[in-house]
Image (cartoon, rainbow, N blue to C red; front, side):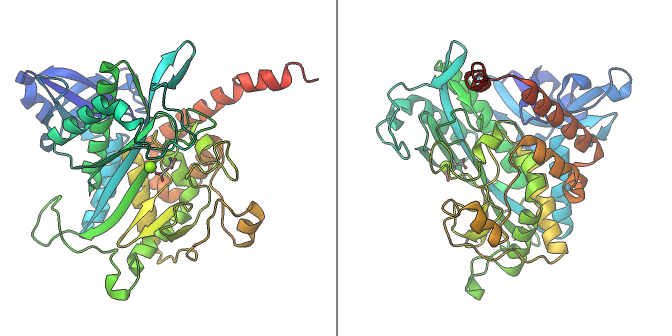
Length: 438
Ligand code: GLU
Ligand code: MG
């Protein structure tokens, strides 16, 4: 081992960092690797003075050799500025949220399920990397899956070598789309693992001449990529210490003969109550809203939620309840996992603190119901654009409170700018529709 890859995550959920020779490990642990703060998206740091320097201070427990990069070990950094935890570092944001759970003797277990595309660059565009992957209904396709075996097995081996328990790999419902699942872990560790997965998948795809893409909806006529969170709340074992496994699942309702305990239902109620604001964190790009469409999409069933509803094993709802846990189906592959998770915790805790009751269980196929029927049942719809979602975030004190004022300000400014640039762009669709129309 000769080099540390000191990695942190910027506001957009992108892995950033630098290589530091291993000889400087002690400094990385004590002070951190230094970066020019304003060069990192979303810090809002100035260009001079002690407040311009961003330090990614290594979290010793995260250090792991990277199997695909011999001699290099990745260590996850927490943001520090001027010797203090940096308020607008996404990992610090999640640390604060986790601390609120810890203060109650709780921990959140999260299983994050990334879906992604393997693409090939074409002049001015991208196409699925596998030219033969063109079935009408490609979900679980065992003909095209083996064609990506060298990549998928290398990815599994790399993740396993990093201690992840890989549960399954499959072909998803779009051409060139796959999903890899690994076992759940405590919220912070789970987000670190998701970032590790992104690093591994990107490197291994590139080595094979492919583009690994977590764009939420690359093709209008195909389903997009979700990044569902499986969520359960646990009592920290009395003597298990930090991050310990085990303890009692506080969402378990087996004794009551149900899926979720009253506490679990309150948590879900909070997640639904804050759904519009959470959208900005869980579906944070212009493109995200092409996945979260209300009504018919060009690809038929996309399995992406649009309705603010919950139901037992209901994959058409925003929250799918299961025994002792729930699946939060809102996040897409472009979400910053730390921010999405921190928002989720704040919303869930708000549901618990206010003793909220979720809306009635929905057992219908929500994709089949017309908007009028949904309205008649008071089932709300998610924001349908990034602009709407950002406005909902700005109006939500609970979720903004979890992010903290500095990150909230930065997030809203960057995302408003992203929306404005998109809105001002003249697309190929507009040219085709309007150039000769009038
Ligand atoms: N791709 C779907 C989404 O965007 C999810 C499909 C599934 O349930 O696995 O959320
Ligand atoms: Mg899936």
